[in-house]
Amino acid sequence: MYAIFEDGSRQYRVSEGDVVRVDYREVEVGSRIEFPRVLLCAAGSDVKVGQPTVEGMKILGTVLGQPSTKIFIQHFRRRKNYRRLKGHRQHYVELKVTNILLPGQTAPPMPEKAPAPVS
Image (cartoon, rainbow, N blue to C red; front, side, top):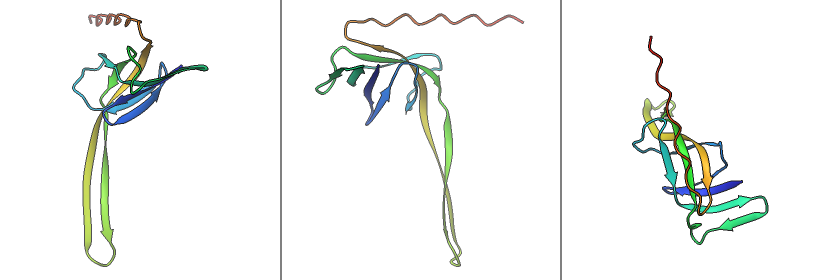
């Protein structure tokens, strides 16, 4: 079973257990994110296409982290004494898709965090 959902101006094709990078938002690691704009859902030969969305369907994900990598852009023209170096860091949220909820299904409760061992 897979689904296509929209977040911001991008569309993502996911199954349960997939790890996806979405646009940055202020969330804590381990919290749950819900995506209500599901455009398509397919389970075998049964395909539900929304017009524009499938009513009542949701995608649930758990935040794994908020990594970012820095990209360096370098411009160079030989023999012209021209060198430019710029950097760009794109922030995003990495999450694991935990559930694809069909219309009428409710979200399972979040698992309780185990207490930290006392040393």
